[in-house]
Amino acid sequence: MEEQRAGKSNKSCASCHGRANASMRGVATRYPEVEPKTGKLLNIEGRINLCREANQKAKLYAYESDELLARTAFVARQSYGMPMQAKVDGAASEFYDM
Image (cartoon, rainbow, N blue to C red; front, side, top):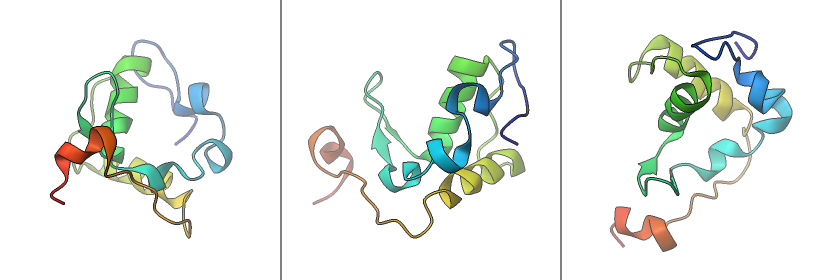
């Protein structure tokens, strides 16, 4: 999965991120998070699709498609057992009822 090339850029996830066991460790603990460029709250699925669009120049995965769910689970697995660190203050505060 990490080495599968996609889109007009013909890049794989590993082209940018390297080996997931190192580069994706702890990533899932931060989501959802606010995307600084858009100000939108993104979950892991949104981040994966943003990477596909911006870096791979590939079609977005349909939400809850097998492809997107598999990649989401793969990324999340790299953070197994780590404490959650999603921020609910600052830019994210408007998305949470406190």
